[in-house]
Amino acid sequence: HLLPEVHQQLDATDVSLNMLALDHFLSLMAGKWSFATVVRLWDFVLPEGSPAIFASFVALLELYFPKPAEIAAGGSEAAPACESPADVMDSFRRACLRGVTEDIDMVLLHARKWLDVIPQSLVDSLRAEISSPDED
Image (cartoon, rainbow, N blue to C red; front, side, top):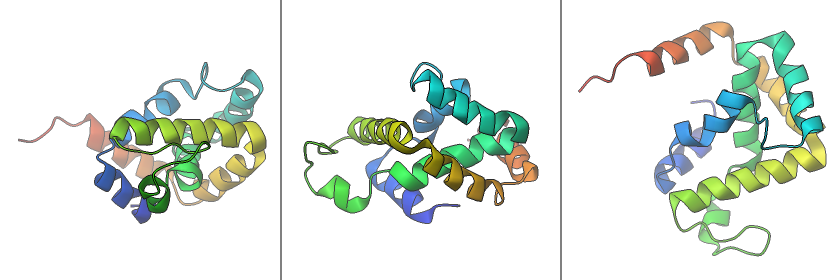
C-alpha cells in the first residue's frame, strides 16, 4: 500500500476506496471542480497517461483524507463530525474541493512526486486485479 495510514483509516471507517475514487477515475472531476481546475488536472494527466490519473488520486488521498484525530474529534464548522462512511467520504470530497480551489499547484506537485512511484506496470496490475472476477 502506498499510503498505509490512509489504508488503515479506510478500513477503520469502513469506507470503500472504489466509491471514493469513482468521480476521479470516471470523469477526472469534470462537473465536480471548477473548469479551470479540471483543465489543470487534465493538463497534468493527458501527457503522462494512466499513471498520472492514479498519482493525482493518491496525492488527493495523501493531502485530504481525514486523519484519525479529525474523525474522532467530533467535528467543527470546517470539518464536521465523521460518524459514518458517508460522512468520511463527504469530508474527503469537500476537503479536496477546498484544496484544489485554493492551491491546485500543491496538489499537482504532490501528484508529480507520486508519478515517479507509480509506473505503468503497477497500473496494469491494479487494472487486472479489479477486472478479474471475484473468487469466492
